Image (cartoon, rainbow over all chains, first blue to last red; front, top):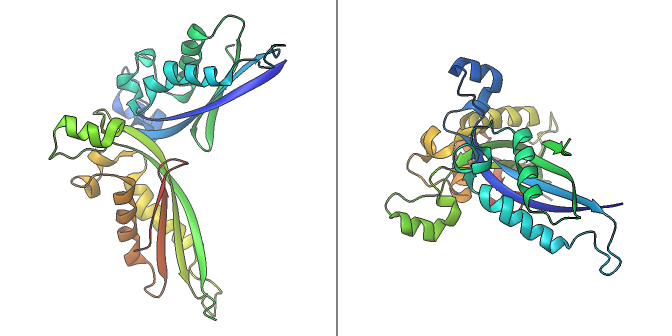
Length: 136
Length: 137
């Protein structure tokens, strides 16, 4: 088994705010991240697929195609956007890094060709904070 | 030999913003600023490098106490801009487009009065890991 990873990036605004809680509860749970006027991040997205290299090409998956797929299905939907307001697949969800990674996984799964196994979505919210999702 | 030494303190903050000139129409703003003009804001992790250059003090051996420099940056910059919307939440960018260029000048001007006049100040600001600006005053 070989694991192939493509790195893409985007930047976006968001806030962590649960509309069913009071402002005080939100501030207690999310601190500055609950700022009503948003804040933002440079996100770094690592997408890893796995498989046996094809005998003909030597590829697990054509990495240029993987890049194109990530850009079309994820980056174009989130880059320079407000995650809470502008992104269909985050509607009604809390825009935490955890939920965003799961959302990205689900978007990619819809479009990956049969036979290509998605292994991991790793998403950096800041250079010091990241999450990993393995579809489990 | 001047024996000048540069000391550099790194700090970071994250914020939302949009690039928009209110004197232009939406079409012109989009033409000039592209996605950065989108109305619902986007955001960045800003990485800040504050460089102070001068001769180390004979008694302490310091150009500037790094802890004081760190506290200064936290007080003057981090508390103003971290987790804020630069366009909406800060008085500095009420009428000034928050480009990286303008932000670096604002940061310089906020810090300069608090740093010994004998020392040079130089600010580098990363808007993304690949885009950064510098301002030496």
